[in-house]
Image 1: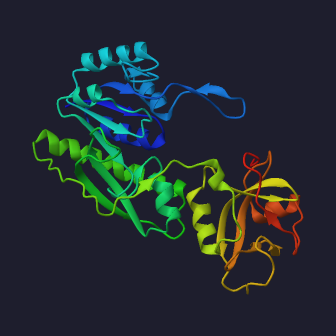
Image 2: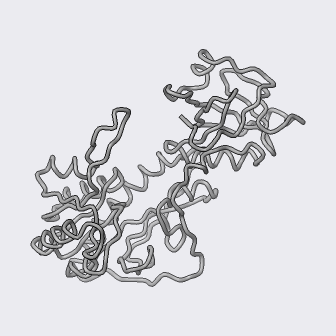
Image 3: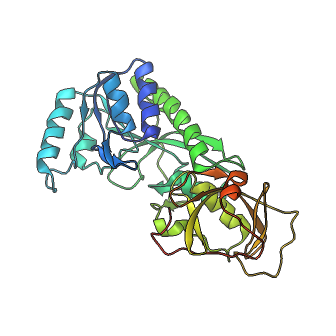
Length: 327
């Protein structure tokens, strides 16, 4: 079976590597154009491009696939490459470009998407973040037949995965990437035998995983400790949550609810205690212990190391930083 692969980040690279290892013929890979990244803002190839080139697989990086869009020459070149590949199917995983109808119709078996949620819950761009933020106990991966809607196509395979209490978006991402890679191989093997069955999505239980806005990273200490802790896990490793100390932005990555420390009548955001066990902060309900922090221009540090560089004392107040001021 000839498979065109379209994807960009590490989540997609895992699936591409699984398909390659399973022996599928991959004549073409589509991925996003190189982007500036890192402190030097040098152009960097996507994880998918780097891996594909290491395997001598042809790579195309159109800025758009819309023939009537801003980059029609990119779309026309991509169409020629897709047609020349004579693929049976296209596999899509976190590609980042909208696929117009001509792309969906190009392969014999259409386009299959690896989506990191149990559809129809968490359609959209940030399903892993939103599942953790909402306090979901489980999530999973859905292999879906793509149509013109936003993650509305028929479901082909669907597997659940428990969300551990300590899971962050980073750890859950890795688990779901591995599961998605296994599932897409299984789906294509079933398709090759004509045994892949489709189930329509229902409108019951639909929710949307909207793209993360940087403003969401700013902690409101008036919220309950449980809500803040979930958001911290959901936004770890990126974009991280943030607060301020004496007007200086600080990123916060890890925490736990301190049920042993009694809540006080102090204002939300007040530091109650700061030691190697964590920085205890009064929330709107309950107390949160911060265990991993990052100052502006610095590295992520365990709390004990962070406190060696910045002295935090009871009574100091963490505030809400101005949008865009986080490190």
